[in-house]
Length: 562
Image (cartoon, rainbow, N blue to C red; front, side, top):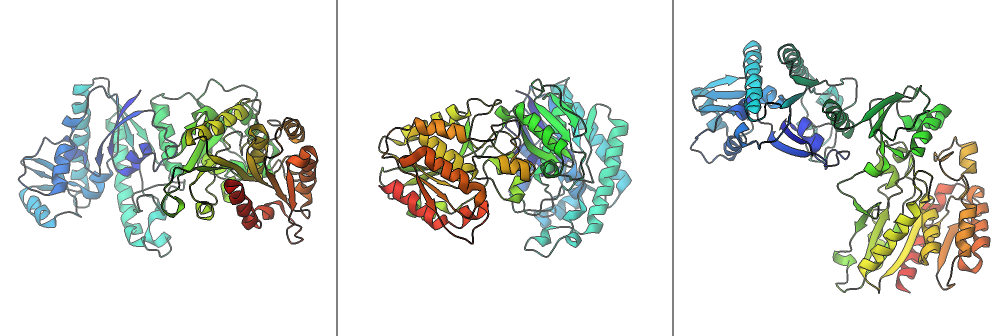
């Protein structure tokens, strides 16, 4: 495992924080030694200061002498040095933390020398150069082969008050004049490092990219960036350190080779649309490229600028999700009013529909495979019901929970997953499979495989209309069976036990799916109940799901109870 020391501001540290950067998979050993502490303070020997002020104690213990051995890389920035500067006193150096104990701070300033770019830029740059030199020397004493990466960051102008609408946290944003001043010194620091430190690799900031984060996880705004920024920096670090095998291609190229050798395929989108998924709706070459990568078992997970990252499906990771039998999922455990306090357990397995337009276009695979939908579902279910939401982690927008050539064991993995979950909950567990549209396919199919009750809403089992009329809207052409009718007929013939209740909800006024709903009913005969909403105001497929929720809940709860 690669050992990496990270020293600097959240702009660098948060690259390796899974709560903020969803794309980091925790595969490196990260040692974080500073948040907003200047390099000068980090380089300083321990200060014997007789004070109970907590921030000073924190600085004392965060010094280079605390760094463990066997680290091979240091990644750092100097944002704390720029924003705060530092105070040099006889005993050592301390960051000029302006928000802390100002009485003690003023005393320190009287005793020492304040180093700050706002008062003397030339002196600041000279001193900072010495601190960077000392940083390198200190680390190389411990590890002669230590490598160094400097994250040359900037503040996007979108982070200024002038660029934002009035909001509760707008006071946290600086003004444009301040950002321009800070960015100018950061630019000078980058030039100084490039000129004087050949051993330091520099990660440059893309000022054209939109890196602003308006509503950050921590509640703070002005020091933070969005997930595209953190992904870009993670990939750049992995390239510099050669931690990943990365192939760069463009949408102008035709894929004629297999890319199994690579961990990442970075696709530069050269179409008019910045978003590659949006380009797929308008350009057949984009669709062909995306589906060819999917056929080689790559999934799109993350983008920055016009760069889109495809990773091997098996390498997908999210710290806040769970994984079992190769299946990614989330689980809501009944608590409070949703729990009776007994040992009774129910499970609602939710096969996820495709998200709305924003989610469909998201380069974040989680938002396409496991969209955050029906978040209040637990409040509408009988007590003691665990909700397990299952990700459709395959192809570009999911395979609709069925096997594909690139993932021929998806169905086996998912059957094993469902059985394992039921076994772990206990023999008396009552289970229901539920899903709409894409999820409806999964709910009904695995109900036939496992003889479990199901509520399926308007499943899409034939992609022909989407391919011919909507430019392969679901991106399955050439990588999945166009029609799943034969698969369902075979599954229906294998069903045993007519007492298992299966409900299929559709609407006869939605011609696109009603014809296939009738085919399913014919195939299943008495083993499936087809419910026609008979609502002439519902004429589009998505309406069926959203306008039949009370009916869905009624039958889900019935199947969980009886």
